[in-house]
Image 1 (tube, rainbow over the protein chains, first blue to last red):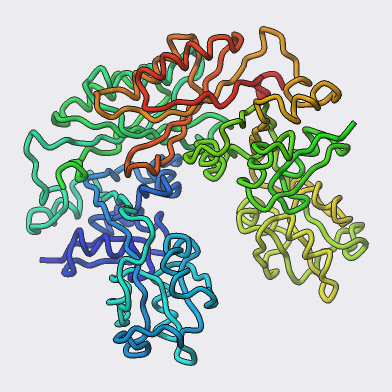
Image 2 (image 1 turned 180 degrees about the horizontal axis):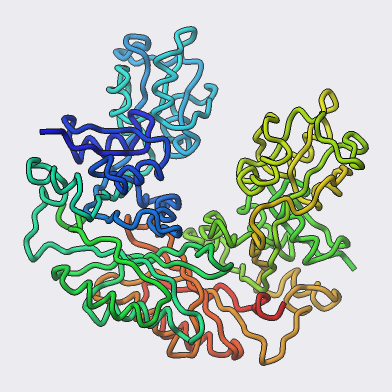
Length: 310
Length: 310
């Protein structure tokens, strides 16, 4: 039996890689891609069973590149749908090469340089001010890259701020954990699959751990539905009409994202996420009603809400 | 009479600088700031009459930093409101030091390096492929920075991709104009003022060109209203209810932006823009209704739609 193939945005030891491991396990074939587009294209063309991509962060908001791929203006990912979600809490650690920095007693006085992604400095400001006030900071393209740089640089005493996952991946000492200022900084990932009975379906029969089968599927589990649409702008209040349809069917709107249509300036595609206690049978009826007030609309997937059932 | 003070995101010759000049004229005191926050804070504390900040781009969508400042989670810009908007079409030019590159006949064979912002390469791909296929490309932090670098580098023959405005600011040759692939790539700027009768009001009496007085104000001019709110999540369909209020008052929803509340994970602040043919007197009634279904809400401004009246 071939292992599941799962694509994610690399490099190795990225937060996407961690989300893939925690969702699909180490025995799956986890494939790093250079872009979100490559990760999703592999699912569309059947080279991968699943892709896992970040959708939004609890502090920074939407991941615009993912929104644009879901909007799919050129219609090249028409067989891809969302089948699950995964919440990953972002924790930062202080990492260094094995046995380089004394930990008992803890002594960071030899450290001359710190490496991390620009966003992580701000997220660890209290810890950094206390322990590394005048130490040089070097930006790198990702926190996992910081871990890699620290592993490969042996001419100076330096440290990286990155995840425990990255520290273990590169075999580094984990000097401190959870050094972030803000608790509960969480990224929500979406799991994408091909809706047509291709490779993914064949794997389903043999494999025990595809995410949409592995989760509890009782009626009481709330479900989320993601749709996209472009409204007709010739009548007053069409957007409100479109949104009201979800309410008519007893679905609670939980988020709305807006992206330029790129067909016409100042015309938008809306991505609407809604939640319900009921099952997905109402989706076709909702889409029928949406068609009446939109230029085009698409059902992007229905899956079990992991925030509530967690 | 003191000139109007207007803040914008620098450096000099940036697109924000260009928008400020085109909105307020050269005789105003235009003040570059290192961040959007600094530009808006100057209006809040009365050091500037206006700030002009990018709100959205027709291709790339919302400017998240501006959204977050308008959301104003810490309540530090409570006196700032939107009073106008300005549409700036983004055109790119090929720029070089004066008389460095022959233009008649045009000969770019001596050029060894090109400078611009990473986003601009993709926006000028057709022109670049035709004329500079194997020329080295150097990323810089902004297109105006590219113009500045080209002005200051005299050891090699190089060129910048930046606006005509930046070319004129730095006294460069404008070798080609409108080299962008996509027509109508437009950024919408918002003009912010202090709603309290401080410096801005005093200036209004003397000055002839504040943006909200300079524009036609007849009843037939459509107006836009921007509001922000955080919904109560305890009842079903509250977001739809909130949006329906605008329709009840005859306002057409034109855009919705969602940002994390940062109060609680997965709780959002919605920024809703609506449009009407009528005057602003209905705003207090709308806000009263919004209060009933939201945790908090704010009227961020009402101004004349410049897209329709242009």
